[in-house]
View 1 (cartoon, rainbow, N blue to C red):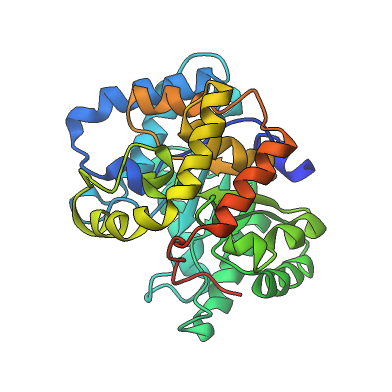
View 2 (cartoon, rainbow, N blue to C red; view 1 turned 30 degrees about the horizontal axis):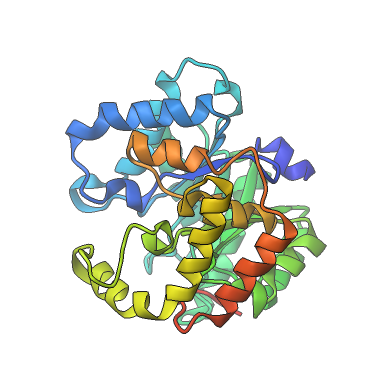
Length: 326
């Protein structure tokens, strides 16, 4: 918790936000004012952690997500400004394999943000396909902390075995790991229930961050088997998933109705109750207001047990990130 407080990361029950790839889906520059308003609303309601990545926005949108975040943070003048914590993830691109490449990448992110990165994270492990590459990248991550260029470092898509190894490697240099980010939701409990990453994080004093807590929108209740479906691959996924998760959605809907909350709010609150920091995406005022409604209250033990059972019994699960290690 000391590391989290130093980084202005919220304690369990406070809100956080993802500001990354989802923000850029369908993005054009005419949305900038709207996104500034969303950012302002989030911060003024106690949302302090904004997560992005240097790979969010490629091609013509090169680094756009970080640039937007930096601009919005600078222009926000309301309460809570001093608590804003910007986290970014550095991609393990094939051309990045030296420690200096990570330092240079973080400096580029800082330039786009207009300030030093608060929390820098390794976006994914290369252990599954290029284990020789990872050593230099991890050394560079630790260098950033030692050089005072960041307030903290974190990892993403690491399993407990790899996490322990990196923790030992960093501990020898006196570099603490602040966070671990994994895909975690009622439709993706694998990292916690099967891999056991939460237990390891608790043992090592690492805060767990849950990305995709709404399972790309499947847990919002806005989609049915009859459609309409999102376009592209996401739509194909929804067609495959929805028939097998009906009991889970029914349970989620029942809890939401009894609480006078939305299904999205219950799904996000479930993550909070599990001791994770959820980072749902928001690019409209409506989405931001709905996500903020997940804060300030907690599911009771009976409701959590009901949702856990429904999740465990679901015929379909979300596909795991291919970079997730054991």
